[in-house]
Length: 390
Picture 1 (cartoon, rainbow, N blue to C red):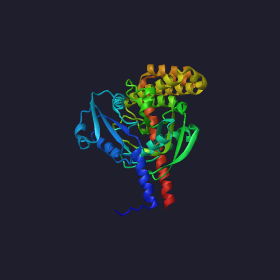
Picture 2: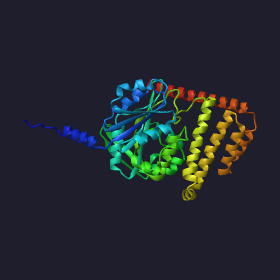
Picture 3: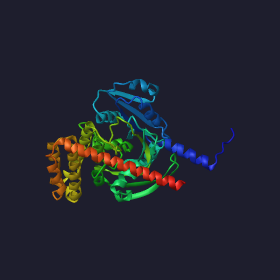
Picture 4: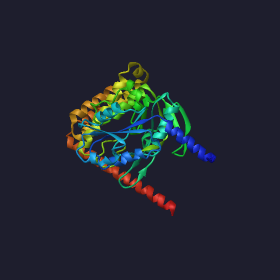
């Protein structure tokens, strides 16, 4: 038999392919509820991964549409678990209990992975066993066809004035074969920063299944922001890592349940209540894992008190927007308890005695003016760009 000769590039590709095949398995959990039109695309994005040692678990949270029919072409590649409707936290917990992989990742049924997500994250985790979770930046796909890369960097962190080196104690680079370039990474203890805001896009995370023995499953009493509480617990117990590359595409569309990236539009009364519920979970997470930890609170009381006051103020403003002055007043009093030097909280308490419709009208007017201002700013930027091109 003649010898088969390989050039150096082919040898490197073979080495990388062998390395990928040798990596441990990942269980990707997709909770779904009436997302039949989106779900096949989500599954296909997993099958398109350069990493192949994958277990796909679909937890159908009591869908009433044709979800089961929509996934029939994938039946040989998935584990399908139908359950009664119990919410996303319950669905993810069912999936995590069933998972056989060394690592666990989540995918919302209306979103997609970029092809290098799992290979990049698993390779990193194998080289950094001291890390309990890795997350990444995220891209957003809008209905109008526009695409926004590095959403975390461009909006979330920039809004807070944070840089990655402010959060993490260690930084470095590693080569991602399928991404085709060197990728920056950061590692460290970011528990305090996680309490300060939504800085981790939870759908991007990947973690070893064994850490569930320490952090537990997701809190099923939370219908919204349950992933935030889960991520906070991971950050409390483990160092985490961030890789500075988008690995996940968030699909922005009507009817979505996530509010991580929804900005710049008016909200109806149902959405206001959902925002209140979301911020209530956030305040509970700060209370449970930061404030009630006596030693941690002693070392960080100024920041934690400020954060609690900020969230209670936001909840109070939402109750005012909804038209419930009594509940708004209760929230502002709690804000005052944690930050008694803020005069504006006293002013907010007095606003609670005004008829609810007055505040709602004023808030709608303010929101519309903000939208007009944003539209004017966008048109101005576009005009400047056009003049530059000309």
